[in-house]
Image (cartoon, rainbow, N blue to C red; front, top):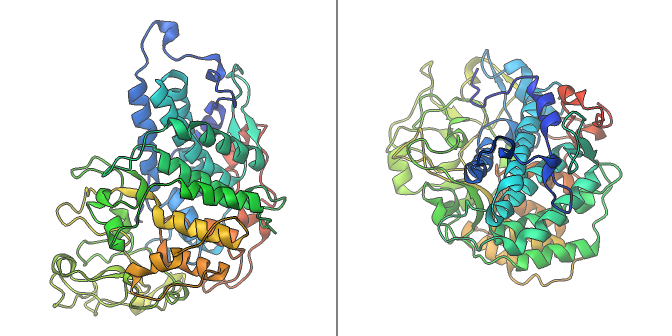
Length: 504
């Protein structure tokens, strides 16, 4: 079993729900509690804020939010490989939309997001004005993910007793809260610092506002599975907030994913990793699919699906980085890997552990065995491995990129927003080596598919475009409407104010 994410205990789900607190819209002190004052002590709000930022590292693992956002789609699959990678069907259930309220990765994501909301609340209660603005942004980001994945969101009103269950926002109420929070603080956040997008900043807040207005029609829909109505005024808001971002595209697409990607002008918000072990599990982005005999060696697990890979032109520079330094260090291009794999230098062919040529194939089944056990599936590396330190690299994990913002603007215009498309699609295409996609909704969806692969937005995009529940290569049936949202974890329902999402 290759599992690097730490699964919190089952009982923690109920603990988090009972412990989550949140300011009301007037930002009063949470729950009437000022931490540390009763004992006459001093609260270290700076340390609390650091902890709130460190929660972002939980997005870097192969499970939890990443798995729910990507493996549930056509882009990523975790097949069982003989006796390996089954994990009680954890990964196959996500890909085939057969999860239930006791699914461990669903529980893990719920726990992670709401525990980080709680950490942000501690800063809001006790921090300086600057710290509070940053914590409110982080809290809005975590809540955005709760709204997107689970629909409803627990909170506490100011002055409420800790002995009572938290109240619960509907999806519409939680959406309104996130918007109100971000619009209240965007002017208080600092400008983005060149070379370090890991601090909450105006560009990041404008990006998140654009993202939530783009999805507002989904979040406010009577049925989470649709149909969705995208209000023209909301789409104009998307355009306004994207226009407020001060950024530019990186000349090279891969500048966003190299070990020194903090220097990319395109990254609007990130989680900082420092060489030497100070950071998250960013190495999972190249180890989760790589074979044991490759450099860097991997866990021989996850792969992409042929129908997704086939959406790309094979020469699209976004799926193939064959820089000579990469070939020298690792033997193979970074991106999607298909065919014969090589040792560093790119000359000597590799073999699998049974002495067969290590040739990754597009053909893949959910349960693999026999001669293709170690080779089935096209493998992906979204981040360029840090050759100087493969185990504790310094690639920052990016959450928000300017190219995504531009594509959101293009989509908002296509959905009726008031704005000018200009050269957005051509500008995105310049560094791909391919012609620009058309400025239609279909063309924009296709471009988001290729530009943002494995970056955590695929489920969100597929739902908004009405494609998430549809049949596909390894899920040859239409999923029931309930799978447009994840279930509330069974343990969390100890809070009587939480109601299980419909259909579970």
